[in-house]
Length: 308
Length: 301
Figure 1 (spheres, each protein chain N blue to C red):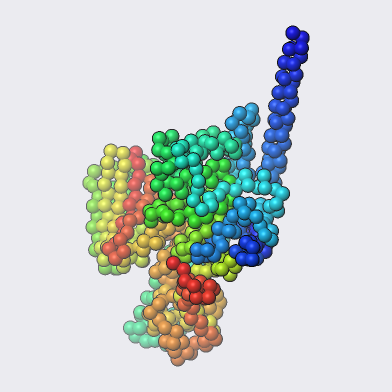
Figure 2 (tube, rainbow over the protein chains, first blue to last red):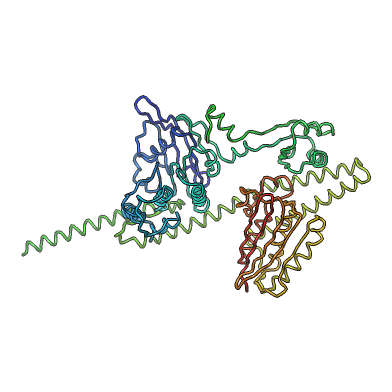
């Protein structure tokens, strides 16, 4: 089941008259992972999500969910997706519980007390008297999430779920989503314009810029790029290790391969490492200094546009 | 009269017809989803309308599927942990081994003399001993993971047991120039413990402190209330970064600062697993630059 693609788009394009909103988007969302759509406001994240959910028409291209083509199987597929697009809308004069009970009656339920447990896990009170109109923004977002998970769907599509929340609320929602993914194996697609938010939450990232998918990359690969270290290839690893410790006073390093050492000590500069090794008779075949930051990486990808 | 009866009968038949057709449709859909579940898709859930006669049945099936999914995830998780272990194992053994060989090579070629020679021998020995400890920890980790650890649970005086364990640490603490203070009650406080597991928990916490905290002071304190005993191990070291703190008990988690030195990311996770097996809880509190407290609580016997 691992690495199974749950959602795939091929050449997904949306045109409004002559204006192309998003063009030829190919995203691949793997089972049991959090996929983050990252892009600045107006990049086209919401448009992509809306097309996937059938809320707006697709101009061209394909969407495949759970291995089935979307047009034609909507009835079966949409039952298995929970979603929030933009701000969740509910009946303003009804309470949260009453609102969810309406949706439960419309869609059917998967267990007894489904409404109660959805409210509980999102930290909202069951059967309280407060109408939706007097909910805070944070509570509204929570109710949106409660509604999305009501039928325990395998896939969640959440458009900026932490928008408008206070810092504590953001951390709570982040933990909640991570828990859904790690402990319950849900697949989640979220969008955000905040790089740090996506970096903390997502396993895979799709970077949207000006209606194009400029990069699809896993967080692990990104972290690898983001690490700052000196990588050396030498003929004798033991000798190099001994010199590093004894002469350069470096303890923070790892032997990663037969001839390869990664040095994490940030007080060391590549030149002094190379000098020390070579003057003591270690054959140095390559030295690589890796020191790109996430921001640098994204800025380069989006042609200079910076993220928050 | 007859006509009214016939009309009534007609309505009933029509109602029955619709009812049966609806039920059939529902059954067909349930069967379709069950086929998908049978083929291994545990993300599927059955939906029941409020008035459906099969509602209870649907709920029960969902419960079974959800439970299956949980089991599946549990299995996947431990498989992932193993994979991670294997990859990090190669680094964790290679690195100290490489430098150990490096030092031995220098010694063998008589590259150093006098005081420096003694120093190199000491370093080489320390590295070998650390590797030995690492392998011991790894062995215990695998024993816990595979469920092979046999717990010998007995009611014991935790104060006495703790004093004995700490006594063995005094030389090591003095060697590392760490002042220590033990505040353990004189009276007997009983807890159901497995002695070797409890020893391993304390050993791992103190070893972790010596290895990473750069502390100069250590306080071990036991206090108890009506139904709980709590043990705290406090140091005045560098503390644990806020971003690392939630993960320190995760398997194979290493803080950035300890990536290169001889840590394997197993010690604290072993401590956590063993504490849980003794029905206890473990928490870490830390302030950067001011020190860390590990707090263990156990139910009183």
